[in-house]
Length: 223
Ligand code: CTP
Image (cartoon, rainbow, N blue to C red; front, side, top):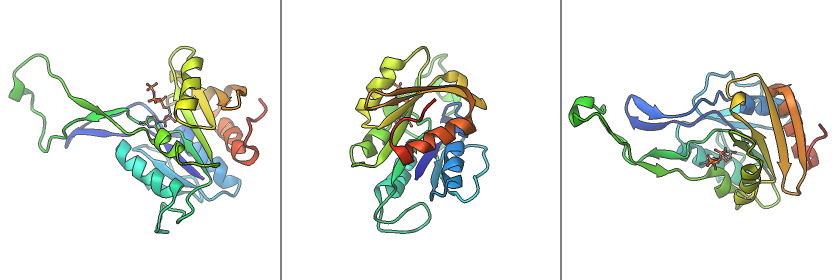
């Protein structure tokens, strides 16, 4: 099983970056739950302060493009069997719990961005779109399980359903900003078959156990 977790970091200059508030907790709990069930797990983590769960192979990455490379190697397969790869065959399931930055600065400055250089009160940063990791590997997943997340402010059900199709996922786990950094969470698991299971105010560990179950049943768990 391949799991991603945490934020990505997109460098502006040697000391500054764009990122988000993801703690990585949900992804780390999914990796822990899968390893406890006996799965071989590769956990691809953005910069987070989390302990690697026992038995899990962890690959640390920084940017969205680094994460895409690591996910391709682990999930789609690679010639090498080095750490972070299951070899040619790749993974059986992918859980994309990472909060991947959609944008990165068009240019990364080699030296510090100095305020005095511009002299103006307003500055702008030109951004370019990052690759969509889930959509990229979703297209090539075949019959393997792919589970994405959707963090939506407000109800977000329609937007999450659209992501399910756009990203070729089997399931999308809908949550909202209250999940960021929290130990408990409320999610709706939306299946491409139209199924919907709500899990309300449970610990991330409990939610992770329910999600890992998708790998075994390939259908939504009972609430
Ligand atoms: N995701 C990804 N690559 C990206 C952006 C998101 O793989 N560049 C994945 C996330 O890991 C998550 C899912 O896509 O599993 C949905 O992420 P989200 O940020 O909610 O959706 P976006 O596609 O970025 O749409 P928006 O931010 O506009 O809602």
